[in-house]
Structures are given as C-alpha cells and as structure tokens.
Amino acid sequence: MNAAANHEGFTRASATRALVAACSVAGLHSDQADLLRLGENAIYALPHEGVVVRVARSDTGDIKEKVAKELAVARWLMSQGFPGVEPRDDLPQPLRAEGRLVTFWEYIPPNRTEPDVADLARLLGELHALPQPDLKLPVLDPFPTMWRRLELAQGVKKQDVDFLSEACARSEAAFHSVVAQHPKGLIHGDAHRGNLLRRGDQALLIDYEMVSVGPQTWDLLPTAIAVDRFALSRLEYDAFCRNYGHDITTSESYEELRTVRELGMTTWLMQNAQSGPAAEEFVVRMESLRKGDRERRWHAL
Image (cartoon, rainbow, N blue to C red; front, side, top):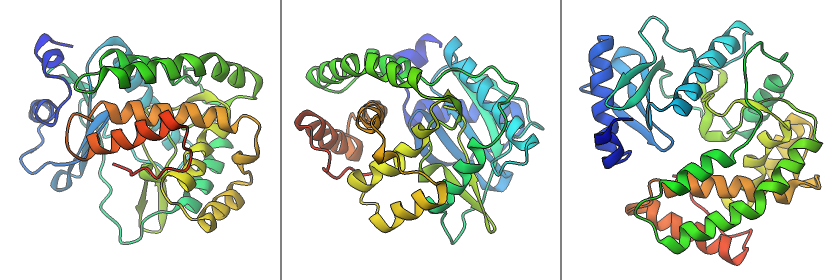
C-alpha cells in the first residue's frame, strides 16, 4: 500500500481515485459511477458499461490473497452452475491502482422484487451441498481481520477500541474450540440478505471474499441475529429455517458464535464511524455490547 493511501485511509475520495485510475487502464468510462457501498471494499456500479467495480482497501499481501481467492471461487461457482455473479474476465484484473486492488464484475440491474431470507436459505442449501472445490481455501477465522481493523482504528474513542479488543481476546479461544469440534464444509462466510441480488426470477448469492472452510452453521448466524438486531419477523425467520432445514438458535454454540459475529459486524462498522449515520450507529452497537443487551435494535448501513 503506498504512503499516500495509507496516510489518507480508505475514504470515498481515495476509493474513487482508485476507481478512475483502474477504469482508465481497463478502457471503461467511470464518470457516471454510482457508489453502492463503502465498507470492507468500495463497490461501484457502472450501469452503462455493464460492470460493477470492487476497490479493495489496499494492495498488501493479505488483500492480494483475498482478491485472488474471490476471483477463483467465483469462477469455480460458475463452473458448478451455481447462481452467482461472474467476474468480468474480458477485462484485465486484478489491477493495482492508487495503492489498492481493483476487480471487475458482472452488473445486475435492479429488480422490482428483492430476494428474501427464504431465497438465502435455498441458496445456502445449494452452496453447502456442493463438492469441496479444488482450491486453496482458509479455515474460517474472522479474528485476524478484526484485529487488523482494531490496530488501524482511527477517529473512534480509545475506550471503544480497548473494549472491543478485550472482547475479541475473551472470545477467540472459545471460537477456535467450537470450530475444531464441528464438521467443516464450504461456507460463504458473510451470508446475509445484503449479499443477494435477483436476475429475473433467479436469486443470486454474491460477494465471495469470506468464502472458507468451517462449520456451515456459521452461514446461518446473520439471519438468526437479524430477528433481535434488525427486526426480522419471526415468520420470516421460520421460513428461513424451514427452507434450510435447521435452526441454529437451538445449537449449544449459538451464543458464542453470535458474540463473535456481532464483534465482527461492529469492527466492520468502526472503520467508517468517524461521522454521520455510521458514527451514530456505532454508538448504539457499543452501548448494547457493553450492557450485554441482546435485543437492542441495530440498523443496517
């Protein structure tokens, strides 16, 4: 990662510069790019080009491995006929631009009918039933990413960073014990409604950055947590469980896994919690974690 990018951090402005530079190399027009999301990556839509552009936070070795894995997983899923999104391999990728790695993906136009959690359950069932891919996949471990976020934290209170660091330290050993005790298989790693799209009548599962090998119940966590945190109705959750065939909240390891997942969600938000809605939401999440309040409503950003 170059010095300028490291000093400025991952902002809308710095990500956009990387977008413009990469699109120039790829021969794409970026003047009407629409920023869809700024989180672990910056995601831009170029509807007139039929392309979605993902700008990673850096071009360091760990990020390079993640990007290479994501592209390889997408290609493998396509070979299996799995309903996902294709990398645009007619374009040069990944590209280094402004100290960041940039990849190009198929653009899926907005659909009047949004996918729901029942669609997510069916897609997870299909994903978990696939054969083990002939790819080098890591074992599920969200902690290195969380530790990196905490180490690089800027613009948030030190006491919040200290609290999250202590919470991660308390949970890490127990998490690894749970992972070691459960059968492992292919998992998406970040399976929530926000990673669904619809092409015509078909729901698609996207974003393969966290694909790994681990307990497949990990992919059920976001939907279970959404009942308490994001006001998902019990009716919708019951449909999710019926379609997948399992309710993770009945598992002995649910509370421990939920804690880890919520720490991951909060450290993710922390990266952009310097001002505005993200800062306000970060306060809400920190208060609920400190109080051990499992039913405090959170807001998706």
